[in-house]
Image (cartoon, rainbow, N blue to C red; front, side):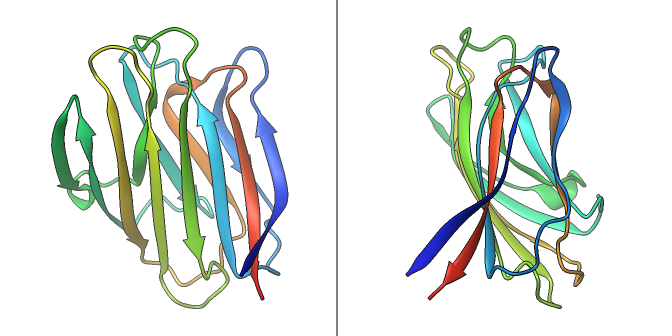
Length: 169
């Protein structure tokens, strides 16, 4: 059995924010989980959610599986050179809707490469609906001490992310 212990919650204020940051992450848990509800100012109906541990933007390989407008989609993101987890709504999506998702990082303090998995949906009452999951590897052996979440454009007001530490008993 695991216990979820909230470490930090970030809620975007008026004017939006280009990123949601968790810094000085305690090294006392087994795993990390981030639960997010967000929307982007991107002009499209959807925007990719991107994770950057420890400020490092390199050495990612992700596989995304999902549903795009009713059709199955699968692609490997290493070719794109970025660390995109899932989609959230952009400004062309249904007004006032927020996408939701969860990111899991097991063994974040280990001296091994870090696996990262996520699932989420962009929530749109029209076309351009994307829901899916990703699983990947960040090839870096440093313990994760900070995480930055970004998207195309910026996060709108009331976008919220909570970082949890997981202790296994």
